[in-house]
Image (cartoon, rainbow, N blue to C red):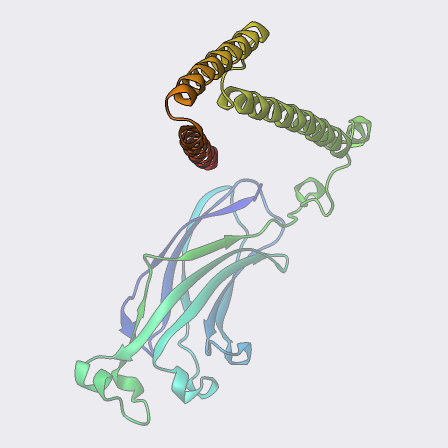
Amino acid sequence: MSVVSLLGVKILNNPAPFDAKYQFEITFECLEPLQKDLEWKLTYVGSATSSEHDQELDSLLVGPIPVGVNKFIFEADSPDLKRIPTSEILGVTVILLSCSYDDREFVRVGYYVNNEYDNEEMNDDPPAKPIIERVRRNVLAEKPRVTRFAIKWDSEDSAPAEFPPEQPEADAVEDDGTAYGAEEEELEAAEAETGDGVKEDAEDEEMAGAEDTSGPTATKAEDEESEAGSEDLEAESSGSEEEDIEEEGEADGDEDMEMGEDGDGAAQTDAGKQQHMQGQHQGEVMVH
């Protein structure tokens, strides 16, 4: 915990001419007596591309510091134009207000600063050489960037830890990596078993579907009945043919027998065509 806490910073002259002094009203709180003074600094960033142009505008030692809330006014001179590149005088830059204890910085406040001419005509068409008397600065006091650092104060107890604290009990804890790897192996084995089971079930369903689509199977009794029926029909048809042949033989002779044989051949041909067409029809059904 910091012994000194910054409570607020107020810029007293803002906006102001470029060459006017900076004036800050600083309020802070001290929680315990300090053996040394606080050092406050104001730094002007002369260039966004190089720190060589940064310049410390002023510094102030404050002390001894009583315990409680304290307030003071910090004044700093304007930046030296000779140390700022001509192209960097106008535009946006940064100022840094910092405080250190025993050469150890514990707080830093950054502000954006906009430098521009006091009329629009000069801003639209600036002269080749800046006219500083017409340049005004405007500090964006509503949006400061505050950074705090942990430092050692007067006591050793206040010093921040340089290394993480030792944790001997952490060595006794089981390694999470081993347990995590075992869980992954179990999950993979379970997924593999589930996948095989699903594949087998799918194959069984496929086979069952194929049996169903092939149509109902005929029983042995039905086969015997159909064979018997076909034999009877053949017997009847052969008997009728013999009777017809005898009658035709008595009436017409050999010529009628030849005609009868031709008729039977035509009948057999028609029957063959019908069977061929039925075979084609069955083949088409199986394809579709």
